[in-house]
Image (cartoon, rainbow, N blue to C red; front, side, top):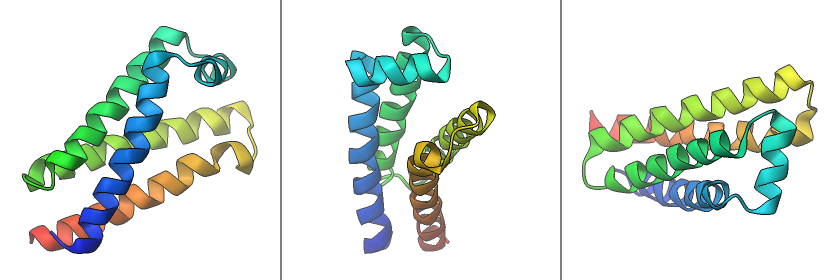
Amino acid sequence: MTLAAAILAVLLALIFLALGTAKILAVQPMRERAAEAGFSVAAYRRIGLLEVAGAIGLLLGLIEPLIGTLAGAGLLLLLAGALVVHLRKGDGPQKYAPAVVCGLLVAAYLVLHLAAVR
Protein backbone atom coordinates (compact mmCIF):
# COMPACT_ATOMS: atom_id res chain seq x y z
CA MET A 1 0.00 0.00 0.00
CA THR A 2 1.26 3.45 -0.83
CA LEU A 3 1.74 6.13 1.78
CA ALA A 4 -0.97 8.24 0.13
CA ALA A 5 -3.49 5.37 0.31
CA ALA A 6 -2.61 4.74 3.95
CA ILE A 7 -3.03 8.43 4.81
CA LEU A 8 -6.40 8.53 3.04
CA ALA A 9 -7.48 5.36 4.83
CA VAL A 10 -6.69 6.83 8.24
CA LEU A 11 -8.25 10.21 7.38
CA LEU A 12 -11.44 8.59 6.09
CA ALA A 13 -11.58 6.23 9.07
CA LEU A 14 -11.44 9.20 11.43
CA ILE A 15 -14.18 11.00 9.49
CA PHE A 16 -16.50 7.99 9.40
CA LEU A 17 -15.79 6.99 13.00
CA ALA A 18 -16.83 10.48 14.11
CA LEU A 19 -19.92 10.69 11.90
CA GLY A 20 -20.99 7.11 12.57
CA THR A 21 -20.57 7.45 16.31
CA ALA A 22 -22.61 10.66 16.32
CA LYS A 23 -25.39 8.85 14.45
CA ILE A 24 -25.25 5.83 16.77
CA LEU A 25 -25.42 8.07 19.84
CA ALA A 26 -28.21 10.05 18.17
CA VAL A 27 -26.77 13.40 19.17
CA GLN A 28 -29.19 16.26 18.55
CA PRO A 29 -27.75 17.47 15.21
CA MET A 30 -27.95 13.90 13.90
CA ARG A 31 -31.54 13.54 15.10
CA GLU A 32 -32.37 16.71 13.18
CA ARG A 33 -30.62 15.46 10.04
CA ALA A 34 -32.40 12.13 10.29
CA ALA A 35 -35.78 13.84 10.51
CA GLU A 36 -34.89 16.23 7.69
CA ALA A 37 -33.89 13.31 5.46
CA GLY A 38 -37.02 11.36 6.35
CA PHE A 39 -35.27 8.67 8.38
CA SER A 40 -36.19 7.38 11.81
CA VAL A 41 -33.53 7.67 14.49
CA ALA A 42 -33.23 3.87 14.47
CA ALA A 43 -32.57 3.85 10.71
CA TYR A 44 -30.01 6.61 11.10
CA ARG A 45 -28.30 4.59 13.85
CA ARG A 46 -28.04 1.66 11.45
CA ILE A 47 -26.41 3.94 8.89
CA GLY A 48 -24.01 5.01 11.64
CA LEU A 49 -23.17 1.37 12.35
CA LEU A 50 -22.37 0.86 8.68
CA GLU A 51 -20.15 3.94 8.72
CA VAL A 52 -18.25 2.71 11.79
CA ALA A 53 -17.90 -0.74 10.22
CA GLY A 54 -16.55 0.90 7.06
CA ALA A 55 -14.07 2.92 9.10
CA ILE A 56 -12.84 -0.18 10.89
CA GLY A 57 -12.60 -1.96 7.54
CA LEU A 58 -10.43 0.82 6.14
CA LEU A 59 -8.08 0.48 9.09
CA LEU A 60 -8.01 -3.30 8.77
CA GLY A 61 -7.25 -2.74 5.08
CA LEU A 62 -3.85 -1.44 6.15
CA ILE A 63 -3.09 -5.05 7.09
CA GLU A 64 -5.43 -7.03 4.80
CA PRO A 65 -5.95 -5.26 1.44
CA LEU A 66 -9.14 -7.09 0.49
CA ILE A 67 -10.93 -5.83 3.60
CA GLY A 68 -9.88 -2.27 2.75
CA THR A 69 -11.19 -2.64 -0.78
CA LEU A 70 -14.54 -3.98 0.41
CA ALA A 71 -14.84 -1.30 3.09
CA GLY A 72 -14.09 1.44 0.58
CA ALA A 73 -16.67 0.04 -1.84
CA GLY A 74 -19.26 -0.13 0.95
CA LEU A 75 -18.60 3.45 2.01
CA LEU A 76 -18.84 4.58 -1.60
CA LEU A 77 -22.26 2.94 -1.83
CA LEU A 78 -23.38 4.65 1.40
CA LEU A 79 -22.26 8.01 0.05
CA ALA A 80 -24.02 7.39 -3.25
CA GLY A 81 -27.17 6.68 -1.26
CA ALA A 82 -26.72 9.90 0.71
CA LEU A 83 -26.36 11.84 -2.53
CA VAL A 84 -29.52 10.27 -3.93
CA VAL A 85 -31.46 11.22 -0.78
CA HIS A 86 -30.24 14.82 -1.02
CA LEU A 87 -31.05 15.11 -4.71
CA ARG A 88 -34.53 13.60 -4.28
CA LYS A 89 -35.25 16.15 -1.56
CA GLY A 90 -34.12 18.94 -3.86
CA ASP A 91 -31.28 19.96 -1.56
CA GLY A 92 -28.72 22.40 -2.89
CA PRO A 93 -24.95 21.94 -3.11
CA GLN A 94 -24.39 23.09 0.48
CA LYS A 95 -26.33 20.07 1.71
CA TYR A 96 -24.87 17.41 -0.59
CA ALA A 97 -21.30 18.73 -0.92
CA PRO A 98 -20.01 16.74 2.09
CA ALA A 99 -21.23 13.48 0.54
CA VAL A 100 -19.62 14.38 -2.79
CA VAL A 101 -16.30 15.37 -1.20
CA CYS A 102 -16.18 12.24 0.96
CA GLY A 103 -17.16 10.17 -2.07
CA LEU A 104 -14.29 11.63 -4.07
CA LEU A 105 -11.89 10.93 -1.20
CA VAL A 106 -13.10 7.32 -0.94
CA ALA A 107 -12.81 6.92 -4.73
CA ALA A 108 -9.26 8.30 -4.61
CA TYR A 109 -8.44 5.87 -1.80
CA LEU A 110 -9.80 2.96 -3.85
CA VAL A 111 -7.81 3.96 -6.94
CA LEU A 112 -4.58 4.28 -4.96
CA HIS A 113 -5.29 1.18 -2.92
CA LEU A 114 -6.11 -1.00 -5.91
CA ALA A 115 -3.13 0.30 -7.89
CA ALA A 116 -0.83 -0.70 -5.03
CA VAL A 117 -2.40 -4.15 -4.67
CA ARG A 118 -1.77 -5.09 -8.31
